[in-house]
Each structure stands twice: as structure tokens, then as C-alpha cells.
Length: 419
Image (cartoon, rainbow, N blue to C red; front, side, top):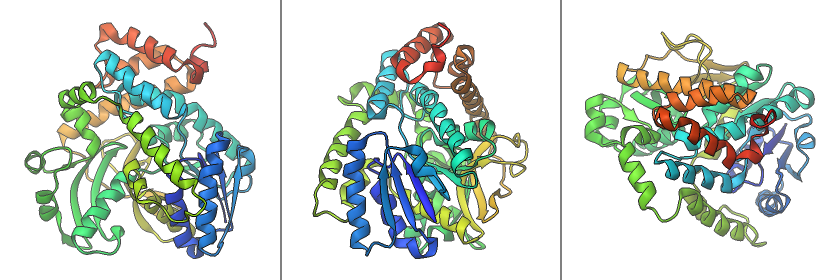
């Protein structure tokens, strides 16, 4: 089997390498190609990955390239983990939010929208190449904003087998499994539903055993445990941007550095360590980067497809008829049965009204953003800004949009072609 990772120079890649090394026999990996447009960074990360694979006895070959098509040719799986514009663009997203007194997080609010506008055309170009060079391959997307990206793939690249992953859902499963003394996160079934970075958990089971009362009592990460107990749900971490908006905005103003700048410092230290010719194991500092369980989610999903496991995974895909009352073509983050034939959404209880209402508004924003990213339609982008719960007042919307597009003009050519 051949796997290609687009964005192979990411500091997350060694974690993925660790997962592939641990499961290489079950996966049957023959070649792993790492592709990145940043040749220097690819050399550092790729060199470290080669040492990791070497220390494990070279169970498969690792190739480094800046040629995307060469990496993709004949691949069975394409893993996308790109960041269009790099960390500098993420920093600009965050400061864009600060300038307008709005949330500028990389996947949520106007920062997430700017990221989506930059990213969708590039991901779709990857999908177009897949149709030529590896038409039967699966595209496993980790690129943020993951759900919005998969929405674009399903609408504008329907021939490509695509699925979106996030480490959030499996992170909850891992946490609950560890608390209960279970060895596998897949032993924990979650009644999980929403969009990527906008989801709610309504129940948890181990087989037929209901563990929800115990879990609900103990959890309280971004929303207080007391509130969640009264609502009867566990809220995904990113819901703090909607439920505690003023607190988040206050933090944006008070923090001397943006999260992007913090990550830049972490990545600088990581790359220095990766460049050490004696290092051949993942350093603990990688967990500061925010990628916990990244490889677990990706490797086990690929394994479930290759080995026809029929395993349950929480992923981003079109929901079909799994959720009553939701349009079948909408991409949702929900439990699915995964086997050789693909991704099969499982019947899922609808969200309570207070959550369903927010989901539908944010999905409207996603659909408009995908349309705008694909077409360069400024009116669609304006509508996306206006409908988003974390967007600007209508009187500011045109100015915010103009600022967003000019800030990232180098990565948004389709918005400026006819000007």
C-alpha cells in the first residue's frame, strides 16, 4: 500500500509516523510519500521521520518530494494536513478578529472563514489531481476547517472518496476509556452529533451498559459541569466561542501574543529537536502543539477501511438519512460504520432544539463560505459573514469582508480576477 501525506512538513507528521510504524504490518504499508511546498521544512521533518522508521527496522520506504503529483501517483490513501499561507496567515486571521472586536480563531468566526476561503480551492485542486493520478484512493482530511473542507469536497469533487477527521471526538473517547480502565477508545460509544468544532455529546455506552450519568457528572472542560448537567449534554471545546463569547474576546485583548505566535514558538523548538541527527523518537513537546490522538484517529480509520473491520468512527461525511430532519447532503460529524465499502452514517438521535438551532445557522454559514471559496462570489461571502453568529454587525460587514480579502489577497485570486 502507498500512502501520501500532503503537508508532510507539518510538525504533526512524526506523530503520524509513530502510528504507521506501530500498525504497519496490519496496514501493509509499502511506501509513504511526504510532500510539502517548503523544501527546507520537509527536509527537517522528513529526515526525522526517516530516522524513526529506520530505528523501527525500516518496515517501509519513506520518500520526500515537493512534487505533489509524484507523491500522489498510484496512492491508496491521501492524507491532507495543509495550512494555506502557513502560520503567518493564521496569525493574520487572529489579528483580523482583534481589529474588529470579533473571534478570530483558526476554525471559528471570521478567522475560520478566512482560513476556509484560502483552503477550499487548494483542497479541490488536490482532489482534481487525485482523479487523474489515483482515482480509487481515499482522501483523509485533517486540514482545518475540516468539516467545511469536506463539505466542499462532497459538493465539488463528488467522485473522490473523501472523509474528514478531527482529533476531538477520539480525544473524548480516549479520555473516557482511560477513566474507565479500558484499553481501546473504540470500546466507548458516544451519542455524538454536530459539525466539526460545533458538536454535542448526548450519551455514552460500553456495549449495552449506560455510562452517561457517570461521564456527565465528571466532565467540564470549556463549559461548566453544572451547566452541562442541566442541559444534559457535553459540549465540544469549541462551543466556548459561542457560549462564552465575551470571555473569549476579553482573552484575545489581554493576551500579549496570539495562539498562532505561541504555536510558532512551539514549532521552532520542535523543528530544532527534529533536526537533531540523534533523535529518533517523538519528543513530549509535540503534545503542546495540540495534536493529541491525531495518529490514533487517522491510522485506525485507514485500518478499518483496509481490513474491512466494520468499526465505529466519528467522522465528517454526508449524513444521508442518519439524522431525522436534517438534509441528507449536509456534511455532519457523527458516528459511522467504516469498512471496505466506505463510510456509513449510523442512525443518530437529533439534537435538542437549543443545539439544533445553532447548528443550522452555522451550517448555513458553511454552505455560503464553500460557495464563495469555489466561485470567488463576494456576495456569497458577505452573506456568510452576516449569517454567522460570531460575525460582524451588518453595517460593518462590507468593511470586514474587504479587510479579510485584502489581508489574504495573495491566496484568494478568484476574488480579484475581475477587478
